[in-house]
Amino acid sequence: MVKFIASDLDGTLLPPSKILPEETFGVIDRLYEKGILFAPASGRQLPNLKKLFAPVLDKIAIIAENGALVWYGDTVFTNPTPKDGVKRALALIREEKGLYPLFSCAECAYYEDDFPPFVNVAKKSYSNVERANLDEIAETQTVMKISVWDETPPCAEHGGIILPPKISGLRTVVSGYDWLDVSSPTSNKGEGLEALLKILKIDKSECMAFGDHMNDLELLQACGQPYVTENAFPALQEIFKNRVPSNAEHGVLTKIKEFL
Image (cartoon, rainbow, N blue to C red; front, side, top):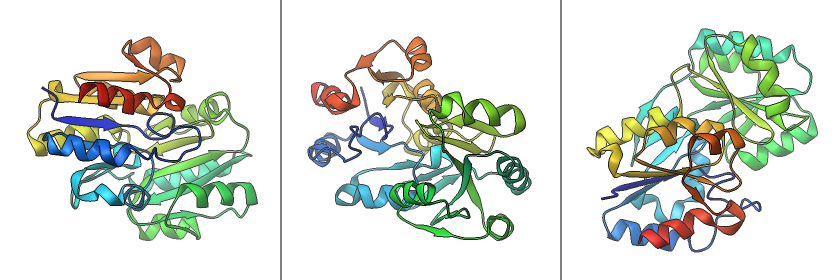
């Protein structure tokens, strides 16, 4: 019996327009009525996800920052990036041309480069975002993860190749077409999901999850019923054979409605 459903957003639940389908809240209401909890599991910040799911905020949990922060009425789990790792990673990212770092903290995100295309993407992706000195932020705040915007995507063929060998001791993973994330070596969506399931006393066999990219790998491994979209990253499709239609076809909602 399924008691919990988690879904990645960008590339999975969200269509290419990145606008949440209108029927999403109705589906979440129906799940809640049947005693099934839904959770968006995203690399996005908590304030952005709260805003996006405001109409059903009392009926969901949230796995934010690629698992580094979990919310269920309040913050119930965090796994921030170690301060020394943040400083070291920042120095290495700054050495590379065309890669722009952004620090994701619990309530706000911070960037330092004023390159207009980067600033435009950052402000579209984060509800709470400010320009700041990242060296100062590294000293004074807890950084959940470092998001890195890649000026020359796809990131899997550029920043995703350059940074992982340089930033040892931290988790560096491509999280989208033009983003990659640097975080605590143990921080991932699967860890966040496992922490939440433990709190809820739900077994992994009672969990269904959906994803499309490599930052969803551990999320899918941590649940009993994993699905990938038809538009999923090829390497992920090699691992998980259960498919739903693409995000453009609203495959996640289609599968959940079939289940209901």
